[in-house]
Amino acid sequence: MTAPPDPDASRAVFIGAGAYETLSNLPAVERSAMTLAEAFTRSEILGLPLEHCHTVINPQTPRQLSKPVAEAAQEATDALIVYYAGHGLIEPRTGQLCLAVADSDRVSVHDTAAPFEWIRRSIEHSPAARKVVIVDCCYSARAFGVQAAEAALEVEGTYLLVASAENSVALTPPGEQYTAFTGELIRLIDNGVLEGAEFLDLDTIYNRLHLELRLKGMPEPHRLCRDGLGGVPFLRNRAYRPPAAAPKPNFSVWPVDQSAGEATAGATESEPYVRLATLRSLLDQLIQQVAPAQSLADTLQTVIDGIVAGLGYELAALNLVRPDGDLVVAALAGNQAAEALITGRVGSRASWKRRLSMGESWGTLRFIPYTEGWVLDNDDVPQWFTEAPEPLHADQWHPNDRLFAPMYSAGGTDFDDLIGVISVERPRNGRRPGAWGREALQVYAAHAAVAISNAQLRANMQHALARVEREQHALRASEESFRQAFEYAPSGMAIAELTGEEPGRILRTNAALCRMLDESATELRRHSFSDLVHPEDIETLLRTSAEGGRAEIRLRRNDRTYVWVSMRNSVVADSASGPHSLLIHVQDLEEPHFRAEGAGPDW
Image 1: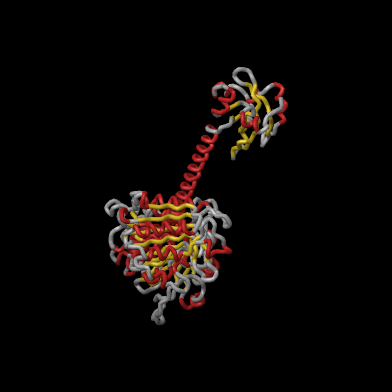
Image 2: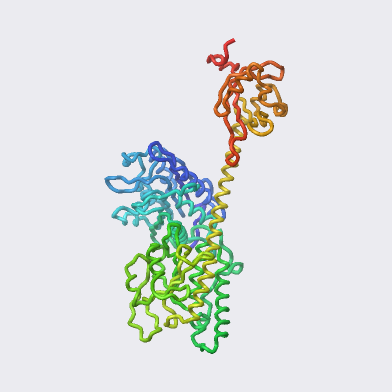
């Protein structure tokens, strides 16, 4: 398979189980499932026809969860996509993963939740060429099989992507609209991958999710792939631009003799200005490559690629400070085996603080020779070891030498201002860097810190703007919901001014109140509410509390007669300025059904 899925031959089921009878409700789950389903139907992403995309929200029974999956599995011939978000439960006897539904109970998991095995069997018997399963729940890696991963591996052409480890919970960050895992997946699909191919494959999606969630201190996703499905085109990359329009920074075309180490290796001490000009030219080119990177992940990788390509080191890693203070290996260049082993691993804040206080201070750099660094071999900082003989001369680089370039926020110089650390290994000329090589790395790290800070700021701004947009959308939806409830309420409603120059002035009325009093809305807005009350009931009105007050009073009709009503108040508050208006609910006590129930005053 080398082509993306055919929408007409594909089927998808998105299940969001967020409402429960005995388990805690998960409102973010419902939004996650519906938004992700909507994304898969958009033509710029996958373009699934609506009739091929089945969304199941809050299934009540295990059968309501499993049946749509079984039906879609039989219909799909190209791609079958199954997504579940909700509570993950463990069957105590077998340890297997079960997917919760509305009436699931932790005490009786075996007969109230849907075993993931049901889903696996439906997928196993599907004629679909590729089967993609996404599970966003606690303990979701148990979908791989408990002590028997071969059960999951039996399904040909399967890619299983899960939100958490087999003994780990999945999370919804406070105040977020989506779960941590699905929210990051939605952002990735919506934004695409800068400098990526026209189509995103599942491995690219997984790697980006893993990095972003790790950087945010969220549970790490896991995957299980069969038959090389991870490298097959899956979804359109919305950030894709033809190479001619947005060429990728290409460090590989640089001549070797342009690196900082090579540029200065043959120069003599009588040529400082020549070497300074060469160094400045080199750094200008490197920084120009870093500046255009937009996303945080792209910026991190571009920074580290530049060190390997331009500064003369064979291996470089970028350790980024997480919100909890620990440092995660966010990007690595120069060795694919090291990248696979180390990227995403975390070193503690205390261990890094120790490293940056050891060895020799080379300006802002920190060099720890192998003769001192052996004490760090077993600490928790991820590192890559290579055996090597003793150096033959004093300035020869040993593979276990360590050189760090700390990066600080603007104006910062101490550990509390640290945003990350660049670590480099194995200079190409085999020597410890001299004065010019050290200067090059220091200047580059300073510029990299600015680029990374800007990328983090952009990312935070994008998240803040997205959050504001969601809040504004929710506010508009809330206002529209209130407007419809107000306008079409069967009983009379009015909004009156609570403070200001004219307390009690009517600001707005609904159609029911206008009919009750046989007055137009325009005419009613010329009065205060007390103008409509019978003179004998004014004291009753004044004694009625503004908050939750209730009273039976008479209101004047257009024909100067009065109607008995039940009135209750509630305050409409503004979050910034406090209470500013009064919502008045008026029920006609002379309506027939009220008289039949004995409501209303005695005449």
